[in-house]
Image 1 (cartoon, rainbow, N blue to C red):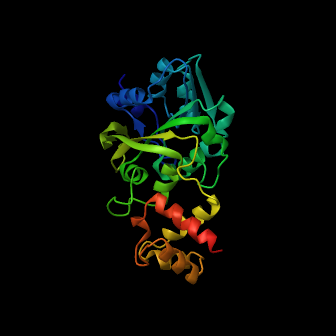
Image 2 (spheres, helix red, strand yellow):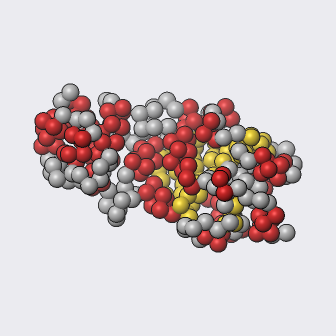
Image 3 (cartoon, rainbow, N blue to C red):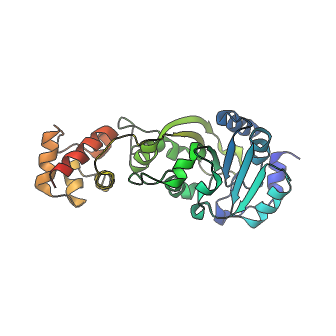
Length: 280
């Protein structure tokens, strides 16, 4: 029975955002991109009925599958593999560090798209969470997301439209991000209404910037993107910063007050946050 027929046999649950990957070529690509060895431990988030899982267990030393759906758990148990550990739990309520011995986990995830941002925040920690246990356990993440979200994850200040924003900075502050491939709607069952993409996040040991106050940096970027139609001066003022100090900081850094936040690089945001800190 091929992947499509096996997927049709299972009653998917729309409330859980289930769209099973049925394209064997894409599954093979995931295995290749993960570059697995018999020394690797894989954390698979949202394995569903196990189409990717059954390939992962052939290549990794151990696969830890975290799945919320009880019916999917029953299908996963049929794999009956010695190197497969099935965890019946919500990933957002799971302490990933419990499964790791040092920074050794490779994460593979085909997740419900509506919780992509919360899952990324759970895996990486927030910008000012310097000692996040989950992130400290992960070496890299292979993530299936909506193409639009993938573009936001890998965006720069030179990207078009509204791609560059808070999700960009969260992702790139802790990881080197790259788009691996586009995945069409027909690669899934049921087929989603959007095109998907595989992204890779290679998690770094240190944050992208060395700052004196990471919580202040988080506040700065949150305010800067809080109202996209406003220029950087007004966005920061509306975000709780004092007008005179904002004007002084921008002047000291030679940033035009009418510049919008999405045109500033992560490095410039770091300098802006540090300058505003000095003016407290």
